Image (cartoon, rainbow over all chains, first blue to last red):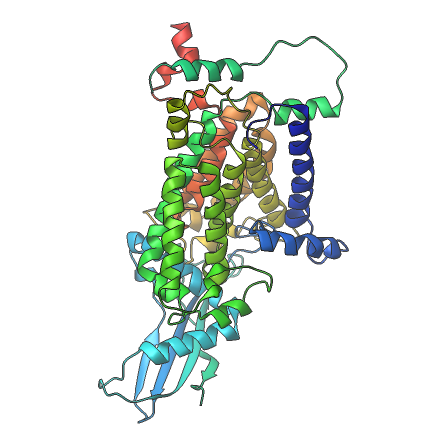
Length: 181
Length: 324
C-alpha cells in the first residue's frame, strides 16, 4: 500500500483515508454523553476489535490527579495470625527504580477505578503469596483491603510546599475478601 | 551520514517538488497534493527504527513481571481482566490458561519487534506487533496508559508506510535481487502527523472544557505534589510554590497544545514549532515519570521533519553541502 502508482491505487488510498479519518474524529472528538453517542458506539466496537481504539486524549485533563494513594491489606490466617502488606511508598522510590516500576505505578493508579474485580484479584494474589508471620503452613481465612489518600489542598485555600504531599487521611476498608469455599 | 548513494539520489529527485503549470484547482487536487506529496521515504524507515527501539525497551520492562501481570497466578487472572475491559476487546492471551502461554505470546511479540526494527518483512511484523500489543493491553487493561495507545497506533501506521524501504533487511534483499523500484510515496507518514495533531488538539479541548485545573492555571501546582509521577530529576521548588509562575507554566502548556496542531502544518512555522515541541516533551521527561510516552511523542513529531533535516552533523545536509 505504500507504493502508489496508478489512479486506482490512489482512489483506494483516498477511500481508506476518508473512512479512517472520519472514524478517528468520531472516536477522539465526539463526547460520550452527546447526542452523537450512538454514532460513537457504532464505531467503537470496530475500533476495539481491530486494536485501533484511542478515545479522547486527556493527559491529565480536564482535572489533574490531586490525591496520593496508599493501599494496605491485612491477611488474616486461620490461626488468627495477621500479616500486613502495603503498596509502595512512591515518595521513597528512586527515579531509576520508578522507571523500572512504571507498570506498577499504572496498576496502583488504576486499581481504584478498576473496582471490585481488581480488588478481589489483588486479595486472592496476596492470600496466595504473603507468607504467614511465623512461617507456618496455615490457610488464609480472609483479606481486608484498605485505602487512604492525601488530598492536595487547593492553592487558593492553603499553599503547601512543592514536594510529595503526604498528609494522609485515615484508612478506609474498601474490600473484605474471603477465599472461595 | 555520508553523501547519498545512487538510491539516495533517486529518492531525493523523487522528493523534490515537480514544476507545475497554473491550472484551476479544487479540493481534490489540494488533498492529493498533501497526501501524495513526494517525500523521502527513508524518513519512514527512521521512524521504524526509533519505534522498534522504544518498543523493545517497553517489552524488556515487561519481562521481570510477565507472570505477575499476565498469568492466572498473577494480579489479574483472565476473568478479572475481562471485567475491566470492553467486552469486545480481543486477546490471544485468553486462548490458553497454561503457565507457558503468556511467555510464548511474549516471545512472538519480541521476535516481531526485533524483526520490525531490522526491517525484515516489515509490514507483516508491524501487523504482528499491533496484534500482540493489543492482546497484552486487553489482557490487563489496568497497566495501560497513553503510551500504549501510541504504540498500537504507530504500529498500524508503520504497516501503511514504506517503513522497510531503507536501512532494512528488506532493502538489502531488494538490492540483492537487483530490483530497481521507484521510491514509494510515503502517504502513511501523513497518518503519523494527523495522529500527533489529533493528540494535541484532543488534550487541549479536554483541558479547556468547563472550569478546569488548566483554565484556572492550578494544574501544575497539583502535579508538583504527586508522589508517583512527579519528581524524576531535581527541579527547583519555587516555580511551583509561586502561584503566578505555576499558572504561567500551566497556561503555557495549554497554549502550546492549542497551537501545535496548526503551527506544525504551516511551512513557515514548522521548524520552530518542532523544536519547541521537542523541548517541551524533553522538559516533561526530565521532571516526570511517564516512562516512554514523551519519547514516543518526539518520535511522532519527527514525521513533520524531512529526512535531510535529520542528517547529522548539519553541514552534511544537502542544502548546506550545496551552499558550501
